[in-house]
Image (cartoon, rainbow, N blue to C red; front, side):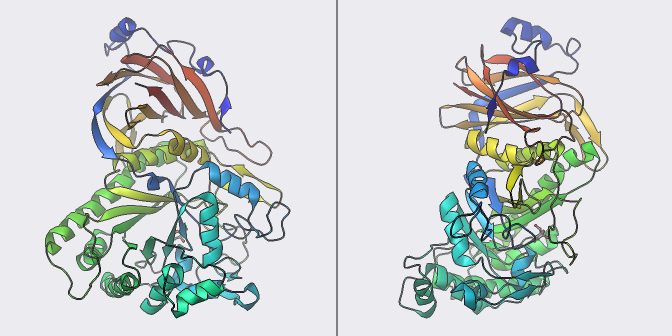
Length: 526
Ligand code: AHR
């Protein structure tokens, strides 16, 4: 829950200054630590697709079993879904949910996970060295998506799977005719098609850690064949090609697939205890995006007007989009392949990690015209914002920016100029302490996200809004805590949370102070 407390106490001095005072404060000598922000409410620089607030669940550790699904638990319903977890997930209003992997999918056969439970095989999972009971499969996943009102995003097995198996999966999910796999779905209790629109063509196939890993050329070949067959079964589906950090991979893949896929994927995990290096690493996300975008541009230019013959399916008309379908901080728990560990990858997150999360959302918002989907990895227990025990759950700090931005950001990014004090990093250059991203929802109002990345100091920003007049009052949401290391736990679940307060006296110019290591969202009508 968003708690209401009086936020004015957070910034007792100059919370809001009169326009005259602000103008004086703008003299650099008078206000050396001030950040100047100019927002042009009439200049939209990107449109934000709500799918950037997507999530990902994988058969890994306790993400599914013991996370969202726990049969026999007093906290679960008759179908085995954890009700408390579902309530926490619903607060995130997850627009799209990716499943079943991740590395897991590269040796997963979907037919193992459908039909009567007693007939499903128990397998050894070669991705995470664990026993997979197959109690949770396609229908349980779709069922979960319907409950939380998320769009399902299935990733196919292009490690050890076949193109035929992939096409059969599309038929099982979406088939409407009287055919084998569509009939199988009906026999399994689902008369109506699941209508799964988004399909990933394999996961991280470039990596040696992947079952059935391949070179770019080999991957592109099998992915093209899978894409064709899947679209022949259902021409309305959208496909995500597997991208990599390596620009050569992306180019090789897109040269062959750009005319059939809708997206190429980008993954990023960052880590390290150094506070500023970690926060600076959002620059790595931008680097990866620029590289993927260049590959898209080059592939587009090379393949323009060229169509592979014999597709006989509607081809994407739009430029290839980017699906940032795995991203997070992940460095503390690298125990995925430790056979002794059951609670794999249960990364503890602190407030600093939440600041990074908010800055990543800013990156996705600014890149909104190109990044039209993103999926945080992962949703529950495994490098996740929600941690469960058999008795309950708590929310990690990185849960809150996901909740806040999904609920209170607009769908249009506004042109924003900033100038303010900076911090230096070794790997990522200099960045401004205040990371500002302004959005607008229709004509209704403006929402400004501000991450104060200064570890120790409260920082002020002077805002100048052009092209719209703030309507006097608004709200301010703040995520902060006693230190950047602050965490939540079962014992103290609310050390980091969202606090809500009022904003008043707004004008086209105003001054706001931001607590050290905090995330703030200012929201006001215009
Ligand atoms: O999210 C954890 C793992 O990270 C995924 O299974 C894989 O795709 C990536 O390497």
